[in-house]
Length: 233
Image (cartoon, rainbow, N blue to C red; front, side, top):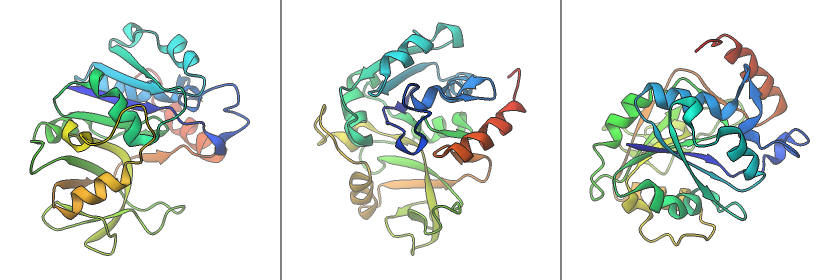
């Protein structure tokens, strides 16, 4: 199974830190933020990775290379300008192949079980099941949540249905979800997910462990403090 790490964002809220360093390379616990994802994916047996980039992408490639230093293989999907999440994934599909795959936001710190997510990905058939999302309790900066987790494990586009939770930015997708999304053009993910949810083709699970959206300098400092406890992993 392959995984894609989304690393094309500009990191506007993190400026000036991101003026000269792409956000996924900001140091967290002595490791680039994106490095923790690579290590956890590798430890889950997922070693074929795709990373998209736009802003200062050459620095990401210079820092990570072909992935050998991490014990993985990295292919890069280069975007001239960021294509949004769905556009970026659709553009990277030739590198991801025809089987279900995992996608991870490059700007979060988490202890999510990627092996379990890989098992969920394997259940996506491209017809009745198109996506499986991991959701987290709503953080203070996003109290309303994104979607509703229903009792049967499916997701509703309305947080008012079931349990209102926040999308972690980590999920498994079947390539069929992006069949109508043209590559090399900006496209948002949320409309695709909501349409699939309306048809009952998206499932989800709640993650109660660590998940931190590293979107501000304050949360970067918090992530650094947490990751310092992971030294040597």
